[in-house]
Image (cartoon, rainbow, N blue to C red; front, side):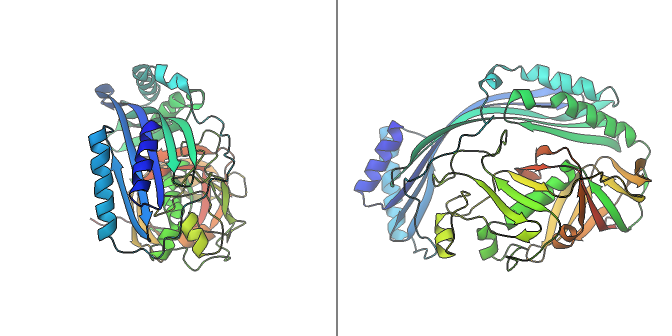
Length: 432
């Protein structure tokens, strides 16, 4: 913390009013594998200080990667120069005072991750997939780190975290594939073997797919498939997205959106997005964003909460509040208990035609199957989900019982959900 104390002192001496300094330190490992073989490994240690300074409603945000005296002095001088040249941001109010008790979060850090064998993890996952598939590809990542925060209002906290992530695609043939991910903060709950096994099973089931037919279907989405949509729902709940006109949830407060609950929980047990505090030093919390289908709140930081006469939800970003761990849940049952429908195991290229209205499309990837009389039937291919998020939310029917924690290249926000059934989903043929 000594570097943070020194930096805060110098900025205060130069006339800064609000200061938030966040030092991040991490040790990361990465493995990439292709055709069942490891092709790249890497280790990286990083450290940086994120700096936020406000004076007379003028704001500067930057980062510092070198901590010697000369680098600190140069950074302080640049910040003061930028403050003088900046325009006022009248939407900014303040940062929080030092008056909080911080949550204790279960299973957010595991020192054993430093000692785990990443090569063994990858090879075990590959071998599980190869019981039903011919080849695999993917990545494995692990990290341990610490975040320290110091503010001009006296907030001073530290928090350790760790994470594990596996993404594995298995191929039975070129067009018969399965994809699963595994995400955890602790090794004991890292289901990498199961991820490899399930990816291989999906690939085998996807052999010899038939052309899908466009139409309106009852669709069961796997957690991995729906995570990209949930990620966008979480972003849409940020007051920043609402104010910028980029949210399909704007002007929807207190409206009923369907039969489900959306929760953001920065204190979630084993949540890879969990932390004691947000980017302002405000404690994180469990926030019921949508309860029994009704939109109860947007996600706020201290300034936006002050403008809207409400309380911070502990989701700063200083400029843009953002989700931590998203949880989607509702009425439980067997989502596959339908006479006819489609099961989508994964998607990619989730793209919005209009963020304000919620019109989007996404392409099913890997195994996609017809459902007949409550059972997985024949594999199909070449369909696209062409829908509106608000329509889909209205048509959520059932959730399975077993939630998965999902992060992926299309869902950077950790998402926690079970397979879910959505009625009357529009499926179209993809365009060339």
